[in-house]
Image 1 (cartoon, one colour):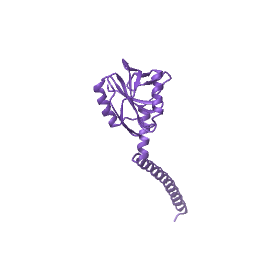
Image 2 (tube, rainbow, N blue to C red):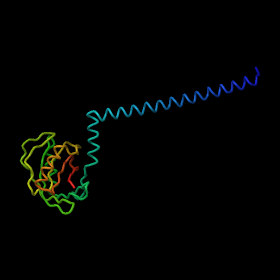
Image 3 (cartoon, one colour):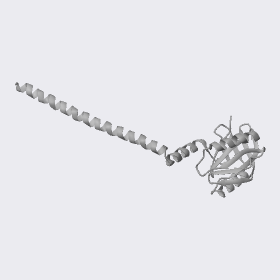
Image 4 (tube, rainbow, N blue to C red):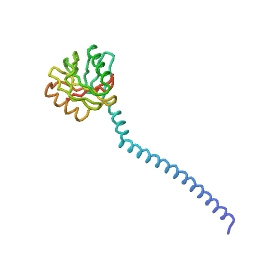
Length: 194
């Protein structure tokens, strides 16, 4: 056989081997990336479907729907407008919240609605039949109430199905009223139907 041809064949074989090595490295890298992505997806599914995942989702969604206290004792409503608390009313509410950390509480906030904003000028506690760390059962608020408000455990800022049923009942008492949820000393969630 011709020595030139043999040399050329060897060069082609070496190039082919080099290409196979590069393809093998690329394949291994892609395989690692694929395994990491699958592992992350499975881990996130596992987290979401466990107690930890539930609380994580609840925490994130609570942050999205809740409002922080402004310097003027007001809260921005997600649907537009504001809730303004009289300073004394806010201090009373803060005191009630601070003294009810072992269980939920319920209060009725009185005042007036002007356009899309609510002005809280009074507060009272209805008769409470039963309360524990996850629920409170009380007399309904009266028709002068503009905000039917209760608490949830810290950072649990999302309304439950029972909260929404209670809101529907409150709407029969005061169609302009809203429902509020206190989930931290400076964090509230409000809901009003459009």
